[in-house]
Length: 384
Image (cartoon, rainbow, N blue to C red; front, top):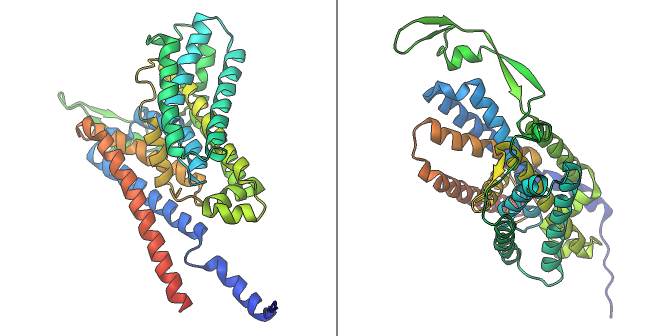
């Protein structure tokens, strides 16, 4: 016969407050990861600046900010997919497709940007929708689906462009302002004293020995892509932390079956994540093309998915899903770009750049696993 059990209300209320403070809390784990990335970024930046003062030159800082913004847009898109426990390997190919089709539409076919941009965003929306449907309805693995997409979209870009470089020419300067413009500058005191004077108000010419007095304030141009990246990051943060759909994505990544039993439409949320990733990849691809004024379909966007995934994982997005913070993606992207810059500044052979990226991803996965095991051991210790 059925057995009816009752729960002591007092015991329930005493147990509830303890759960947010649990050692295994995803929020506390993410905060620790973000803080760790911040200190690592600070250490790498200081170390590079001490070894090579040119690291703090205004031009180098502006370039770092611009590259961080461009890759950061891709990384936020990758983060949405990773938070569901999935992966998207087609990011670089979507970048190539958008980056090659934009100048192709504008210069070859004479389309205005007001028509070309919505068309490309619509195409990317269909790409993300196709990924999501194949994964949720046919139950294909995200790795397989997006790997096929990587080949398909790269081949499509090469076919459309005829393997020829697509460029904007000398026109569209106002449109290119979105990627190369700088709407305003900010003052940074004593920066030139550190970078050029080596902690002195005077710069000494290396050959003539002539001393030149340096300005105590250096003006740093704020690139337009940084403002666009900031807008995307704020919107993504609000979406993940302040809306019910963000909580649904987190729940989906932590336990898909439990989320489904709780009434969450897990298929729809998975599709949404891949659509957002594809849209941001397309947006980033257009900005990359506008920055360099051309795109070569053979190698444009190559391995950009690695940078995006590495930045997201470094920033606290667990490859298991269910964890992540947009601030961590910002810091993770900045760290990746500082590492690339440090390789050039310190005279390290650029051939090992991908080795550094691979080591960073592996370190992030290992750290994630160790944190999980440590949290589990502490939870079992508290429970006993």
